Length: 487
Image (cartoon, rainbow, N blue to C red; front, side, top):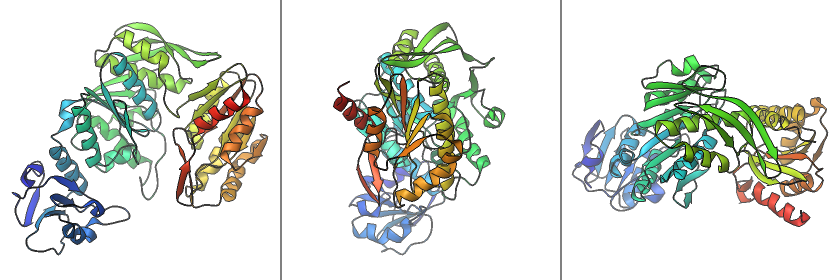
């Protein structure tokens, strides 16, 4: 299509050439530059695309989008713009024919629960016969196909491309995790959500490459409520008033503790061989009991929000009940094994707050022992290790300390840091740096009634050491050990 079509919602200035130039794609990585594409000079935290504009032209790009001057041959079309990220998103939406307009869209933000909630909503919609696409931490799902992603919320070009694939594959709905970074960097520009959900907020993603402080983090999170028609917010969150302060949407609330538009009450834990979950009473337009196949009160919050969204979309109670009874989320309170001997759960909890929350939840089911297999990632804030060590030490009856993506750090140094938070708790532990051996150790030495929590990696299927990723899946290792034991 003509470059002018891609620029129809963008403020720009023609430096050279013509917007009548024909283009067939937008490229922002010069290594992928090809004839017929427009090269977008994107300024990142590590690289500046303007430095590679000449390389892209040399590979055949005849149009270049810039935010500062570059020297290029006179026959090249050069377009000057102001806001890089916003422009890339708007041009990408135009390139793919504004696919979000053809989908009913649900965007989910919050510190915890986004992935689980997104899978719950997807399960409900599919139980109702609605074809649904999903974008989030675990990747992109379109029908039976799964595409890996680097970020919870991918770059805007990739988002628009995936939305067009969903539209072309017959999807009616999009369920999407919307990260604070995705909002801050305009990756979701061009998408106005039918429903925006805000689950909760606590300090996270604060650092030089993310958010300056909690106030900035909250600001960007809550901006989702200016990008949706209906906002659904957890009124029980301590920061509720700050979250909704600048909302521009129709606002609805949900709660486990009192007055709200939608509520859950009478929550009870349910545990028997082959099942660990919760039961609660939902109250919205109608009231009914729900059996949820994932443990934990915080997952009742996730389920409540998912059911609220379903009700707003006129999805039947029957579809809700069927989905809640069977929903599974890879690496999020995932029951990898449950039998008379023990129950093994794999979870993504990888900081002190999430570890404390999920382990306290498991204690509520009164296991004979709570055994925790965990480590901490390398090249990350050491305070996470102290906090993880303390959280596990206070909750566990036995800990197995192991590796979790040491990256470029020495594993023994990471484990030493974990001990600084762990040792004062007095919890017994063993150190087994090899994660496969650690998982096998915990399961093979389990006692009847134990709950074993393997935390930190969740859905990840790799171990990263010295920049090299090799295959390692906690769930697969559980299955191998169970098969070996013959249980």
